[in-house]
Length: 174
Length: 250
Image (cartoon, rainbow over all chains, first blue to last red; front, side, top):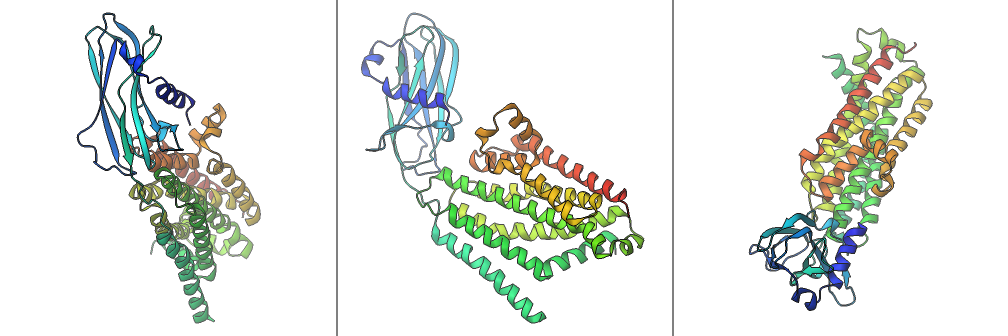
């Protein structure tokens, strides 16, 4: 688990207040891609599209934009370590002039079943706060990944087959 | 018939048709069965854990292949010497390189059988997860040079020491050392020494590729450096076995 990704996720989850966004000189949109599966399950890919726009009058410098994921199942609320979910966790921009914008696509591979909330956050070198997009929620359906019905016949059957063949060979020889 | 083919056929026939060979296969299947049952006892595994299971099975198969290779390789020349059949073999009109390659023929046959035997296990633990086809292909691509390299290495030791037990012990220690990444997690190999060891260790190259391909779904292009390490291991050990056989004392 990468400590900084957990830290980012925690900061992103904790600082997502409306007040933060109200005065933000940065507008961040977050839209699920149209081709995302309607009922995603473990193993599927989801893509989120975000556009980051400088709505203020000052050039933003040293802008870092990153994705955070939080599990929101009752009793299991926790930030998710994105290491296994996404290789595309953050983008940097050295400067963003007033009125200027750029887009980022965030692909995510769904690793674990549950209810999740994704958010895009941004931090600027001189700002004293974090800017965040609206939430996008999604549910990941469980997919059976390990089936004992499939493993038991192999785990028991193959040694038995080899043992039977060995016994037959030895009896023929003897 | 080519002398290499002749020796290889004899070796593989003796190995696979004998009770010893079948016993090997039975032991291997029991180990894989126990491993599969232990690894999948948790039915709540996530998709990542499923890939992790496939990765661990691939690593175990490669390690067992290495073990099989050093047992067979250690016996290849020193065993002939101890049984008193080395001198008659050297008196035939074949070179020591032919003997080394012929002896390796039996090992190749055993590895092919072992690989085939592992496929149902890989399917059983990995067919509902991710990258099963890649797992099967990369086990062949990376497991084969690693396993055969251990075979050549053990043949070389067998020729140098002229004693099965010494060759086997030395080869076993080498296998344990090189296969240690199977037990040590990646985080324990992050030091400069660990990274240097990983960079030149063919077993690490294979394991890191299995991890990269099965868990992280990364393409072949990213594995070429590691493939070069495993092929270099195969070439180096072949040279070692050939050189050791040529210079062995009768």
